[in-house]
Image (cartoon, rainbow over the protein chains, first blue to last red):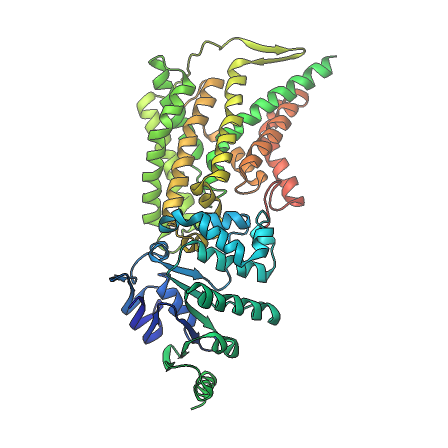
Amino acid sequence: MNGLVVEGLRAGYGAVNVLHDVSITVGEGEFVALLGMNGNGKSTLLNAIMGFVKPSAGSIRLFWDGQSVPLAGQAPHRIVDLGIGYVPEGRRLVPNLTVEENLKLAARGRAKNDFAENLDFCFETFQILKERRRQLAGTMSGGQQQQLAIARALMTSPRIMVIDEPSVGLAPIVVDQMIATIKELQTKRRMTILMAEQSFFQAVEVASRAYVLAHGSIVHAIEHGLDAEAMETIRNAMMGVE
Amino acid sequence: MVFLDLALNALASGIALGCIYALVALGLAITFGLLHIPNVAHPALVIAGAYAVVLANMRGIDPILAALVLTLPFYAVGLAFYEFYARAFERRGRGNTLQSLTLFFGVSLIVEIALVVAFGTDLRSVSVPYVGRSFELGLIVLPYRFLVPALLAPAVILGLWLYMTRTHSGLAMRAVAHDERALSISGHDPVAIKRHAFGLATALAVLAGAALVIVGPVDPFAGRVHLGRVFAVVVLAGLGSIPGTLAAAIIIGVAEAFVTAFLSPSWAPGVAFAILLGTLALRPNGIFGTAR
């Protein structure tokens, strides 16, 4: 099966260990939500998958087309080229480049040949980016920048999209649109998505499965549909209620 | 009439001077302006470039042609040096500015001493057919040994600007100044981009060296008079602005030429900093810089 498999992951910053024995899987075509309150290790896990944080133990592997590629220990740009598209927290766009230049910049390696096709897809998905393609990224609103950050990840021809807290700093109505768009990427385009989110209700509505991180460990894995009972469990886990 | 004559010639020679300053500052606009590396060795590298051009010229090769060919080995030296710098400094906690400054002062001294050992302290120059002749237009008289290297600047800057705006690695070079992680996410290796940029900056040093040695003879320490001015040009332009580098250098060149013509040549070296301080008080990001 194609997908991303994280097993027994330990990672942290310097002497401080943040993640303890974390295991998750993301299968092709799934929308997996990673839930948890601030400071419980969501971003650290995504940063470890992307190569920005070096794991001290465990493995991160991408299984694709019959191949098993270890991601841990690779540089971030290699991981992107291997097929993990990343939408980071804070968006990390290049503010002094235009919308189109930001997108062009991401058409690298494997994604180079798909440039025209990917760009069409991005402009089709995010109309506003097409209209503003000559505008400097730094001068756009938060919601538009978030769209650009997602579009940039799409430009890398991702096999799996890793999205870190797309709702941070956005107005509620913009968040709704953003989550709906991400959901459409999965349903209409068969994209595989791993999304960290702390706004619980937003995430469970769209996700096919969910993991709950608390104090750096997976405390719940909801594997078969998010029914009312599962949602209650997740909410309690997130709130620290036993 | 004497006033007009003086003013016109000050303007013309100021613009030419500014173009040459821009060429000397261009490498630093990349290393300091885009990579934030305080490369105080750049003027010394420019002089090393000038000596390389002198050597080629002794075999009868035109200095500008020689410089164009020499950009390749200089690029390679830049790559190698950046690799050393990145391994020794940047990977251990994001490059300490004071340590880097010390390193580049050291490099500057080593380059100068190497030039002294190899060539002695005598002035070296190149011979070109147009030395001693002047371009005349009305009241303006501009020696060709001044005009030719000055014309090199806009050509090189236009080329660099096209490269930075039209090519993939040019885009990446503009991005690296703002956010390395943004580059990684876009599938680029930030270290490779910075190494390439440093190589390019070093290659530009030899073009600037050719320009300086056509203008007049150089000695191994000739870079020192440019050190303060090139930093003033880069900061005045606004860190990372390539066309701004030309404009800022011309402003400084013209101001220096006017001060030389109407006040006293002794004041000229201070002009760059007076303009810099005045501008930064009004526009903290430089003339063409954007807020960061």
